[in-house]
Structure formats: C-alpha cells, structure tokens
Image (cartoon, rainbow, N blue to C red; front, side, top):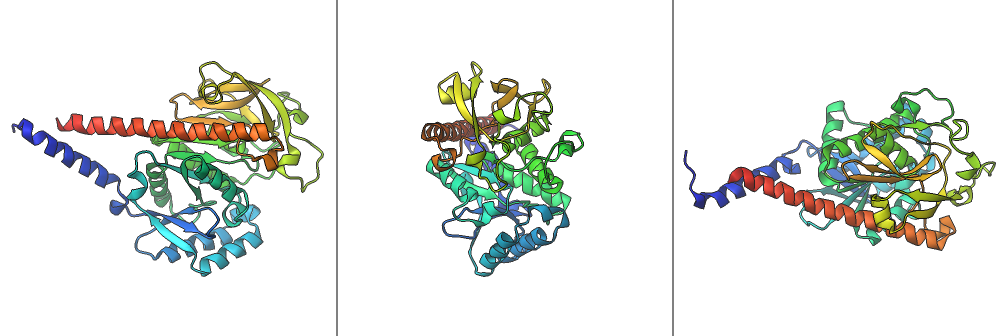
Length: 378
C-alpha cells in the first residue's frame, strides 16, 4: 500500500505512542512503589502489584524481610521494629508512574540499600547519601534492602525491567564483603557475606547494565559489586594475596565499634589518560581515602577496565560502553566522616560530574530513540 508523504507525521506520532505505551506501567503487571518512612528520610522503592492496596504491598515486603531465614544476619531488630511501626502509622506511600520519565533533564537515581539502617535512620547513611544526590541535581530513591525477597522468579524479572526503565543512574554503596560464590570462589578470607542479599543486588546491577538505559556508579563494595557484574573477580584479602599491605588501605586493630572515618587510610592514586575520571577531576592524580581489605582482580575479558590505580589496586573502573564508573574509595563521605574538607569537596564535585554525565547520556539516548522511531515511520 502506498503511503503519502502527508501521512508520515501521523505514522511517526502513532509509532511514538505505541512505543511509549508498551513501556508504560499502565500496561505492566507490576508497578514501583515509593515509601517515605520519615518526612526527612529517603524514599524507598519497592515492587507493587496494582490489584493490592499500596499498604498491602508494603506489608508483604516487610513480612518477608522479617521472616526470611537467609537474611537473618542483616536484620537489625530495632530498625525492623521501627520500620513496622512507621508502616503502621500510614507514612507516605505513592505509586511511581510515567511522570518520572517525562522531564528530559531529570535524573532518577536508584541507590541500592544494603543495610536495614539505610532505610530507617533519618540521619543515617541512606538519608545522607540521598541528600547529597539531591543537592547535586538528581532525584534520589533508595532501592529497598532485598526488595525482591517476596517475589517469584518471573516477578523478579519484571521488577528488574521496571527499575531499568525508570532509573537513569544506579548507585551501589559500601558495606560488608560480597559472597565469593558470586565470582566462583569459596570463602577463604571474606568476612560475614550474605549470599541471599548479595545475589539480589548483583542481579539488579547486571540487569541494569544489560539494559543500557542509564549509568552505573559504585563506591567501595559497590565498586566491587559492579566489577563482578562486569566479569572481574576479587582478591578476598589484599595482604594475603600479596597485592598490597593491609595497613595501606584500612587501619587495622581498631575497636570493633570504630566508624568508617576512624578506619580510613589515605594514599595516592594515578589516573589514566583519556578516562572519564580524569575528565571529571581535571587531574591525572588524586589522594583518596581507603577503607577496604578486598580489591578487584581485573580480567581483560570483562566489560569494564581499570582507569585509576594505587600500586596493584584498581581504584576506579570504567565500562567499555561508557555507561559506568566506580571507585574503590569513598567520594560520598562528608568532611564530618572523612576528616578532610578538601577531599570531601572533590568527592562531591566528582559525584556531581557523574550526575551531569548521566543527564548527558540520557539526552543522547532519547535523541537516538526518537530518531529510530521517525526513521521507521518514514
């Protein structure tokens, strides 16, 4: 059938509507829920089934989080009780709709919680990092700890698809050691890993990276988690592996109650030419903090490559497709934790640069998508 030139704009508009509708939550069997336990705290993303009331979806999640035996090591009973109390008090709950994607310059940041306290403490890490990202131009949400815990495998896949469709910047934070099974090793020197939660976070990152709909950023453990998703492995202990002296990367023999600031070491990092990190920092070197006993064991076949090094330690990775950058150090630490105002200012500037870069990549993707739609219709 012959199509006149005058009908081309109509066909293009129809193609755009169909494309939008197919990715809209209105046509999905699941939606994303944003829960705000505190008015001053972070908004938490959870899966939601439209046939349930939002409060029921929240109750299902909290019940599974409380009762899953494989998550016992992550449960802080005081935090869990407080979360249940806040849920019972009808704290703010909203369904995230397509409006999150309509503003071209808006960056929806999904920050992976890996501690229960990330979600409940209005002055804790989750709130602090959320405020940092908001202050620097992002629209931040926490992805709930083990958010998929109550879902069937097919439901997990839908949740991951929705996350990838809505998030423009996925962020993974520092925390405990990652279970070595996720990089095909047995436990030798890893301390207290949780395979259940680690597997969920890794699947989330892999799905997001595979979708190529946004930029990934990781700090410390998050850097290592992103590395595993890309095909690297880890040294379970840098000193025992002969890679570096432990004292150069974390202060040992500290009190068990010592905070991250007290555990920091500081060292020089060399940055590769032509890397995103050098572009963002406008320098070929930087002095960074360090709070880790494990490190990335780089594979040449992985989807990312090292762009900054302290001796044999991979201090930063960049994805080969340009959609990810991660750091072994902690640019998110404020001066109250780092004890170094100059470093914390540089760290915030680095995070602001990654957010701006994510915005640029989002605009590029929208332009390519629109071009592809109109090319098909012409």
